[in-house]
Image (cartoon, rainbow, N blue to C red; front, side):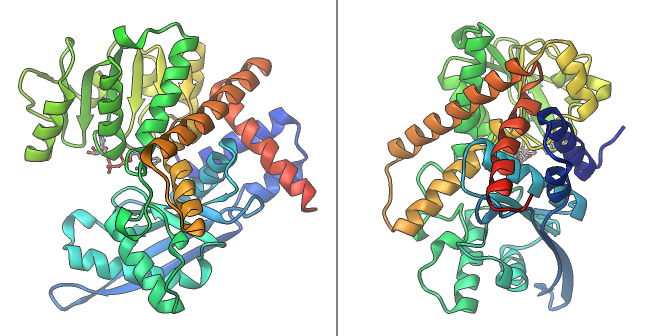
Length: 414
Ligand code: NAD
């Protein structure tokens, strides 16, 4: 089974290029990032010893505009994964019509075992290492797994010190509100995912007020998606996180579960629920299954057992290509990651636009714009998939590639 994320991203890309009949040059240009940096970052730890961390920044293509993508702090992150994520970011930006190319950054580290001041020194060190290659019209980082708005604030501050600039907050997005962040950014990924679920449910004749959902992962995206769906009347019957899972066929009280997670740092042992393994959670009969944790969770081994009517990929790359084919044969539509979780980058784009204008929008304005932009992309993708008799993922890749290849051609690269 192919689980190397770069090979998977390239395989999906090739399939969509072939399906669109694009000239081979398009795949050749896009199959590898335009620029990949590997940096070493010496950090003085709290015990006085210096530890050197390895980080990456992959800038995939700038044919549609400056590159954009989050920075991940994770002990297992690899260069191949970073490059794959940068390819997905290009497709994600293009599919929802943003004037950006894709990028991704990462540092191999375990922030759970670091103090806040160690994380601050690492964040500043990473920006010093890549500062020549980023900028509000060049490459614009953002948060990703295990980085947050505080990390973005340190990074922006360090960038200002290096550049001697005092007003270019658009160099980084996902910042705290007080220093140029956007209202709605914190919940944007979940909000966008919910808009796509509403559209898919209409087409599958699912009444959300009678629907059930299962969510894998209960972090920023999973927990916010659970809250938003439950406010629409959807019954969330099971969720899990890295420590365990909980199930109640009558539905979980998400408000209380959030409090329980805050107190115990885990969804496990939530009163009135049955413990459930990750494998069993994915196989629960429900209307909507939402992987919101990590890559490669729905695989050849477990896809056969999935009984959901819709899968919405809140996480990046949660379904392997083998599993994709199995779900397609079972007639289960998968709202692909590049659409389902694009709300985060869409509102990051709004943050950047507000920073450039130095004029800020209300939450209602942000959410309304997000709704229009993501639903428009959903409709386009659904139409393309029906026309070409293909799944939504390939439909989304085709829409994105059409836009990218037009830009490549107009700019004279092919
Ligand atoms: P997060 O760190 O806040 O949450 C991740 C959650 O997954 C945690 O609850 C963790 O316990 C859980 N988890 C980890 N391993 C697990 C496992 N093996 N089984 C079940 N649960 C597990 O991260 P997040 O920001 O919510 O991101 C989740 C996914 O969404 C990632 O794939 C990320 O790339 C993607 N994503 C996030 C955003 C965003 O704005 N935060 C935007 C686009 C995509």
